[in-house]
Length: 287
Image (cartoon, rainbow, N blue to C red; front, side):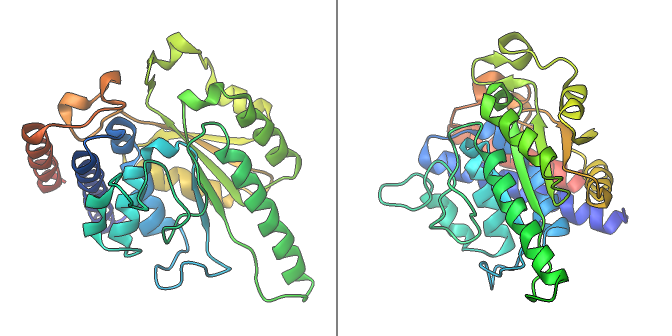
């Protein structure tokens, strides 16, 4: 990846982190830890990989994105605002009385494809979208319609992999050979109750997904270049769905929140908010 593009995307990731923290601070509630860990993933998808247009958010040919770990909506709202789907000032409306910017993704908002938050359901929603895309592509190749299909991306948390519905979706995606579906697992090793490996161990996670018939790649989820490599390889796979195990740091970008389960659901106070913004600015200058 070119250094200029890498710097641009790193700056966007920091902007997403600032936006997510602004939303959580304004609401005095939310989930900052996981929002910070997925900022690089979302920034890469929305500013580099996905075919989306904020001027035409319902374009039938658009790529679809599903945030299965819906409690990290602050990060999704932040990247959508930065991409131009709505004003950045709306982030201050997060979880305010009467606001449509509720604590989990809301399809009343431009750019949101599915209401999520009940963990374990997002992959199955993505499977349905991807299957519809494959059907559309078949019709297009047969000359019966103009559209040529689209790609679907689903971001899941590692904690939610304990939900059985995830594996039902995984079986269906493999059965239908959905090579237009890419799942990204935010593997930050922590959930609200503590370390994932103590609560419900995943063991050899890649081998588990491979046994379900998925193409498996692993990358550092807080490194733009590593994500670029993994997602480019994912798009090249033509024999079935792809899962990327993105190894991340919960709370990445704000040192006192990093690898701390206590920051799964918590709001910074005024001093911590200013400290976090200052630290993110320093990180951005060092890119």
